[in-house]
Image 1: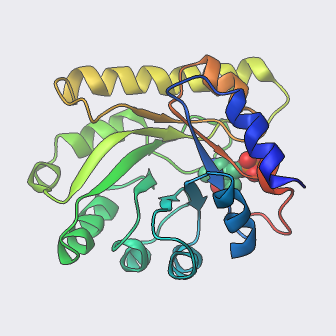
Image 2: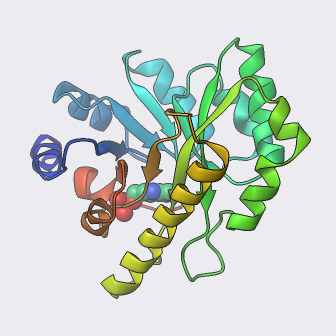
Length: 224
Ligand SMILES: *Cc1c(COP(=O)(O)O)cnc(C)c1O
């Protein structure tokens, strides 16, 4: 795997306004350094402790993106430095992020993760659950978290029409939330969708961030 070539090729294919999050989960710090040397600054991880130990080892201008399911008890490991949490799927988690962010005197940006795939195993909110969060008193009290957009994972399938439908659904969810809860809030602007196998479709459907791992760093030894 030539990390530099992969980043160069993928970046060149992304339109302006779409950021590449290089998903480095399970990969050693050396692989991140190689991508960093080529200019990549945003990296995605899905295990808080792994992210924290890489944070300690690597240059401090790296942006760390949490893309995996996050347990409340683990928020503390990443709160001091995480740039964006893509995977917020409950009010309880938001409240926990608020507390840990306040301890660090930070505001942490978060995306609401939506369930758009057909598999029942994939995590994420329904639109109705997101509305319940937005209208709750606890949400209105939050001062140290900021919702800046939405995230979703499409079904793992060869059926590109289905994947496209799911990405369209996420875009619609984004637009509805924007209209009802974030009008006049320019920071609500991110649509995180698309992985190695489907990011071209996500770009066509209007994402602002793609999360790409194996097409940059090669296959992982194990998947989570
Ligand atoms: C692992 C992972 C990715 C990257 O997957 P690839 O297929 O290796 O590009 C993207 N998003 C999430 C949420 C992931 O867990």
